Length: 378
Image (tube, rainbow, N blue to C red; front, side, top):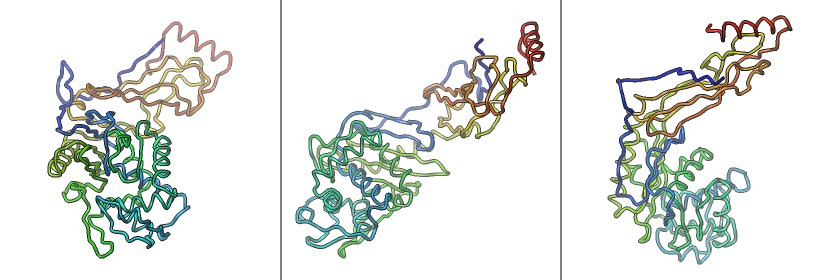
């Protein structure tokens, strides 16, 4: 027998029809916004369309360097040599000097803060011998962390018809850095860095606003337009934002700030249940107990717009009665959270207690009671 229990319907207004969350448009050619705590997508526009990422792809260059720092194969005070190729590279520069050596720490800041193309090439040659070999490693590493469409042809984001990413995968890469390298992520919030006596400011316009922003990277070429991968944290919530294809640096700054404010204003995170909370009590068939409590193994946090929150429903679904024996921790039911305009969230519910099989007499009397009176309502 299939049983669906409506546990909760939270409604702030009587609604005969469910309202969809307000949407927002953007002049960006590609855009993607999501809540990093829950993975909920708040906005997507051409999010899976391959595009030229420009310097935003330097996040992958940084990732390969951070991987090596994390596994201990290199250290911040290690140094890499500066080749003539790195020294001559145009575009944004850290201003390294040929035939010198630069510390990994300075190179990191030179890429993250100054967007130095020269610093990227120094890192590429230092880790892989050549920029071409390093680009292959970038693509391989992208596949390993779940970026299925991204392809890298250089370490800098320099224009190349085959150097491509998507807005969604840039956001996922940003999340990878934030989650896996919290110690080094702080560098993305630095507003300036001085090297070779030249002070340069961070190009990320969000850092200069009072909005909780602390990263990540801008990009611009004629092919890509103006782009931004940004992130901000407020009251424990973290939003990641990607926009690309904008017409000017001013528009990038304005649009990045506007979309970030919209994401924090229109959506919020709601803690529905904590791990271990008893969500329901399920009927048991021929067990030492008539019911077994159902709990979640993890906290359940969902991201909803205010409109979605008004019509959210939470249901528990399982086949009843659940036959004994039941082992504590065994998944026996499913919790479903639904609201208009959101992807349905599901989570397994597990038995909070062991339920054994009783003796023959108890099994017989329980079976008779169930057949005569039906399931217990206690």
